[in-house]
Image (cartoon, rainbow, N blue to C red; front, side):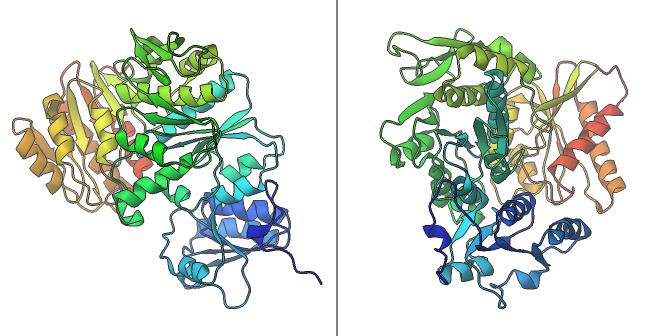
Length: 499
């Protein structure tokens, strides 16, 4: 019998996975999708995951009926299986390179791919174009804005990757998409060799996930992989020199252009803002003397408590640049941005109570993300704190100090925030909400209710009460979404006129 070629040697696009012995490492959303899509196409699939909960077991039962083997429990994640050969490992993005099973695969010469790498290889020739987005902050807003613009242009497009559909489901969709708008994390990019986007952007780069990558340089390098083999446009932020450097270092297809995005007046090959208009001097016939009007700031005004904040405008410009790189007309950019609404928990205006605006940006889980929200209003009562993961909040508090009229601190250890506020905003009243035991939902409701009550008492007409914790939620809440949901529920119970 003739041996089948190794999976990494099989031709692609349209990679045939029949007969490939696939180990799926991690049984989250992307792991389930990989197991399902490869099993349907004749692969022999084994899934392993350290979690053994009822929720995971229920997902496992669905696939096991279809012939996928699932092994749950930590003992299955410490080494390659001893009872079978493996041709390919497809890893969850959260698994670190030194994880024992992945390290064993690498030592044995077994390829370790992300779901993204597998999707790119399995997608058929002539399949949907890929427009990629990464960055420390703003990815989800930008990718969903891009989806809205593409759909306004009449294209069958979907946001996928770190949001929405898994990429492999979108890439292999039987009806076929015209364009995929991909949100990609540094974890996903680390495990991806062939992305080959038509156009891609890095929104910004600031310190995050340094423990996973081993340092700032490796983290930035992982982000930079999104530009590799870009065919049309590498979009970067003019105000962030790291993103420009990553463009300059990228191995792109001949003819790909560097396209800058700025909140100021754009130069040639840039998009920017002039007299309240978003304009394009990159994708026009004579970019040295002409610009195309894409939208107005008024078209984005619904995306903020007091008009669209600068970081949202910048996200819109990045989305517009990618859409224009794909050939989308200017009117579709305008229509898509007018139709767009921010997702849950991302600078989401919850309510106006007695002329105080309450904003849920619980997704701001690091200082850089919180900085954008804190710059979007003039007078802020700030609800902050949580697990900082070792991040320094001093610079954040220093920049925001002049805008703060009060601060309410959550988190089991509020020390970093207390010390920074004492240094940079000693006159600002600060309330520390005692942590207590937050193991039960009722206790977490009590905690957030106290925080919102204190913020309500500190705020005056015209102020913004902002939940932008600059920290992860895991020390007190189930996740950032629960933190935001409890905030919204507590606001809904406040006395006063709600609008």
